[in-house]
Image 1 (cartoon, rainbow, N blue to C red):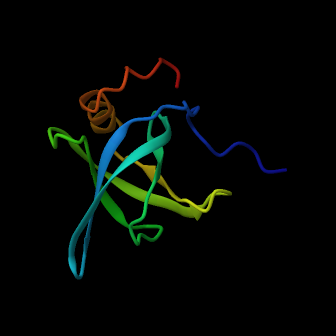
Image 2: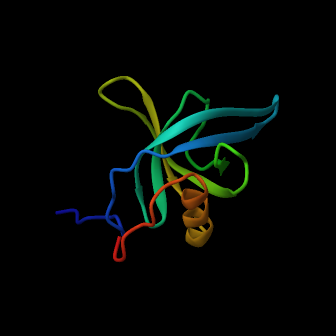
Length: 110
């Protein structure tokens, strides 16, 4: 049977962020909110046309801190809202981003 593939536990935490996607028609961006976060990633809502494997820039709403994220999965939930599973290769940058966006520090062991 398949085992748990996540390396870190998820924490239900709602943080306002900005997503930026550089495409052939220019830069697209939107304000979004996380649905949950873990030590190295987040699930966010989106309306952007994004595919798995793309790299996005994620920033706090004041654009003080930004971090690169890789889209690991794109899917529509039961509510028909599209969600992105984002992985942040630089976990420390992601934690600085969360802090700049007003999130509490992530608990140890998460």
